[in-house]
Image 1 (spheres, rainbow, N blue to C red):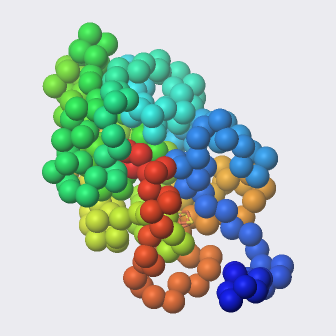
Image 2 (cartoon, helix red, strand yellow):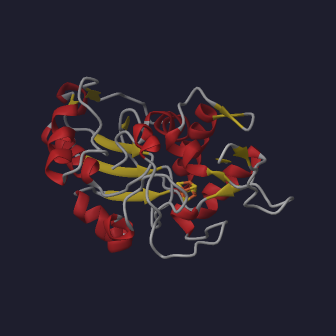
Length: 251
Ligand code: SF4
């Protein structure tokens, strides 16, 4: 900190405090080609997809990712399950990010023009649709409808993280507790609300076990409500707009 021309070092944590790295960086925020703490993000996301396939197997014809957020986990799911991977939804890269739009109506519209389903691949097929997380459910409700309209016979949602139940208290711009669909509904109710035939989330245990090889302490408070640094207020702090730019499609 620089104040009145003097530099002061602030140390908010006691020396030797355990390091806890944001697991959402691995699951969603970071580019897949990043290496965090010496671990490759792409490889880790694929592993999450493999664990998800073991935890929630399903009979299906295709594994389809939500582009781009579910891309790598879907590859891992396909590999583990032996179900073919198809990019049966094409994404329009010229539409701006839906997560950061201020109004729900604009977010809905953004999702609609951003994705297109490929009917010739989907017609009559049982589809596993893979995404990294469900925050509000805005994107997935549209995508499930889109897949059905394109001819998919069944749509099974698989999510490569546990239900998102807690907002970030440390600066990441996540929605409030009230906006998180997993705080309002059970997984069965979410499945029904999104119009899917089944819904499977990665378990918290599965997430934690798969994070062990990362050899770094993790924060998974978004999924566990276990905040590693005490949170004084029940209200989230003012969000840093700096982080908004990485929140693409996180809806
Ligand atoms: S609360 Fe969630 S987004 Fe915030 S640091 Fe922890 S895991 Fe990351």
